Length: 85
Picture 1 (cartoon, one colour):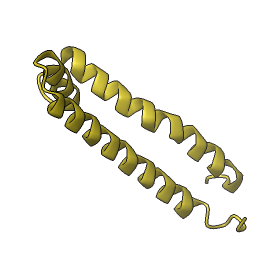
Picture 2 (cartoon, helix red, strand yellow; picture 1 turned 180 degrees about the horizontal axis):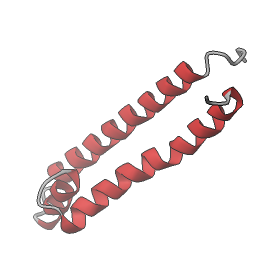
Picture 3 (cartoon, rainbow, N blue to C red; picture 1 turned 45 degrees about the horizontal axis):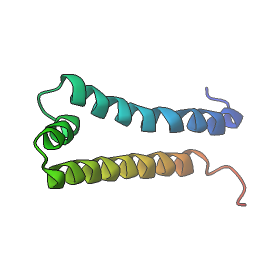
């Protein structure tokens, strides 16, 4: 059984890995991938296709934003017992 007081600490601990995990995936694709956002950005940079680079970065930003929204929604769902501030 989970301790209700530990939920804020767990959710705070999830915050950094979500952002760093996405960065790690993109960097991994840049160096060793043959498909994905990182590969697209790297290939666009090598061939001077700035539109490809910016669309890849925009796609990454949207995915990171979605992950943050999902994390915040999970935080609200698990923190219903907390008093309003």
